[in-house]
Amino acid sequence: MIVSIAGPKGGVGKTVFVANFAVALGKKGYKVIALDLDLGAANLHVLFNAMQAEVSLYSFLDKSVATLAEAAVSTEYPNVFLVSGAGHVPGLANIFYQTKMKLIRHIKKLEYDIILLDLGAGSAYNTLDFYSIGQKKIIVTNPEITSVMNSYSFLKSYVFRKIERYLRENRRFETLTYLSELKNPENTLGLKTVPQIVEYLKTKDSTLGDDFESALNGSGFTVIFNRTKKNEDDKIAKAFCSLVNQYLGVSNYFIVRLPEDENLPVSVAKRKPLIEIDPESPFVAGIEDFVEKFEIT
Image (cartoon, rainbow, N blue to C red; front, side, top):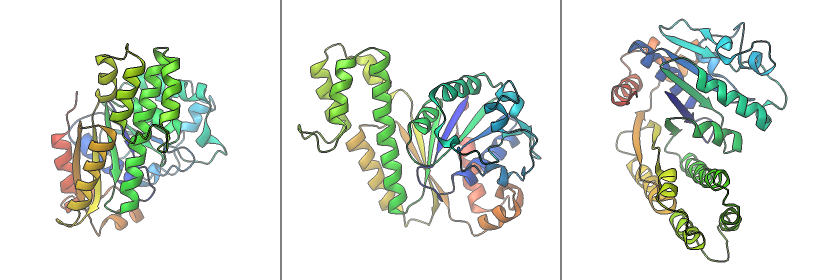
């Protein structure tokens, strides 16, 4: 199962979440591989203290190894493997379409119980396309208003990207032209929400039926509100839900809160997931509770 994990704004704790999530899944007996796809700004290897990994994602991209599986290294944690993004290659954040598609094909060939994709910040098409291949999708944010708005913007971009891909793959090019005009919030028809735009597209293209609707809502996602404080951030979470429901027309999602934990900076400094340093911490308890409820299919 592929799990794509996005953190649309830097500094929200996405990579810390991925590292602890991977170790918690490994402790449950799942064979897990974490791929650092934060191209150009990777740091997942730091949390696993794999600074000198013999192979990495770049070994695959420059054809030093033939398969992505050969770019994986074991970690010191049971059942957990890593494809490191360590190293800096200028321009890598803007890989070519053919390279992206090759990488996606090899991700799908990996023989692990769970494949975690640690994606970069922002909503570039490469990030959105990597995000789209996850059977499970996670967004990591925090209660700061800038982080919440960036997460909403990411989801909006993802929904529009999904509509675009559907129309292109089904050769509805005229409808795609309408969509290009309507994506602008200042469009001449005054359509502001995705449901409004979808309904308008259906009036222009009578062939858009139930399969179109299912393509939009076929896979749900989880929003991780990281670094929350007791009962203080409920209003922001509710406001986020209202935005997603009203403006994106998406209802298939879950909200999870992970508490602020003063030991997380210690974990990063020691280059170890907090689940190994302080297994009784509130943050770790939140991760383990999430793993218990996470449906592995």
